[in-house]
Amino acid sequence: FEPWNDPEAKPLIQFKGVTKRFGDFTAIDNQTFDIYEREFFALLGPSGCGKTTMMRMLAGFEKPTEGTILLGGQDMAPIPPNKRAVNMMFQSYALFPHLSVWENIAFGLKRDGKPKDVIAARVDEMLKLTRLQQFARRKPHQISGGQRQRVALARSLAKAPKLLLLDEPMGALDAKLRQATQFELMDIQEKTGTTFVIVTHDQEEAMTVASRVAVMDHGRIIQADTPANIYEMPNSVYVADFIGEVTIIPGKAHKRGNGYDIAFAEGQPTLHSETDAALDNGQTCYLALRPEKVSISAEKPADRTNTVQGRIIDIAYLGNLSTYHVQLPNGQMIKAQAANTRRLSRRDFSWEDTVWLSWTDTAAVLLKG
Ligand code: ATP
Image (cartoon, rainbow, N blue to C red; front, top):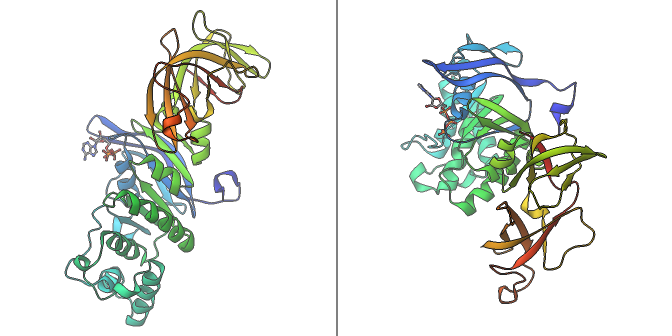
């Protein structure tokens, strides 16, 4: 499912040069991008980067200062929130405490004056979709947090919106339940075919549920791509650093073969990266290296291009694997991850050990400064 690569695919939402200012503060800075039908699109970024402002503009609670937002090709500017084929599920769920699960889900349909049998059929469908049939008569305080979350989801999908906005939909759930709920949410999104846009602080959650993740900074989308591309092919030091663990090694690039040699410190071997970057000779560059792509060994490996020696100064034990922080003689820190295949008492490496780190020509991504 890659509508963004399909010239026939129709965007459901189009941002065209959208800017939002509050006074002289620019919260969203001239953004142009599309979100496709049936997409699960995540907005990710540090606090204050503009995620909520994006959502509020889509919902119609805020108007762009400049530019247009189209939904299904139609300019949304003159259309008030309640007339948009858009619904928003809030972190607080905002369920009516005095109404039953059934009545909560039926609320919007009743308000629209839909016939009784239509309402009943639709509520049943929603109860089934969210596996809440047996809780239909209960009040929100008589069900669990996870079930309340599903009621909120059922209620926000009852009117079959084209677009559902989810603001930290799993923020109130504990870690174990969150994971189960993520898969449920993906399943429901797929079954209904509704376009979902989610805001979350949790990058693992965004990477799990979304077809594309938009990484934002200061009112701009820096990269919007599949989770795998965001992780494996970040377009900037900012994105590489924001998603997952990474080591950034600054250096100077020199073209060689299909890639670049990188001189990074005096007395250190030249590194090599086969990355398709357009760099001038001698240009400052940054190697972004994921820790799981770095091998750690006691002996110098014979067959790797990128081989450096350093000392272990920190070990983060994560159960299935450990992250080693290795310091090179010039002070550069490199993180390496290794699976803990042996029992801890027979651990391969300890603090203060001198070790070799190595990685292949294609392991690190070369980025411009
Ligand atoms: P968080 O993750 O903390 O919720 P966010 O990425 O959702 O942050 P927004 O709520 O979109 O960020 O806010 C973006 C910026 O715009 C912030 O600096 C915020 O202070 C500012 N802002 C948002 N709404 C208003 C407003 N009504 N008036 C003035 N400034 C605002």
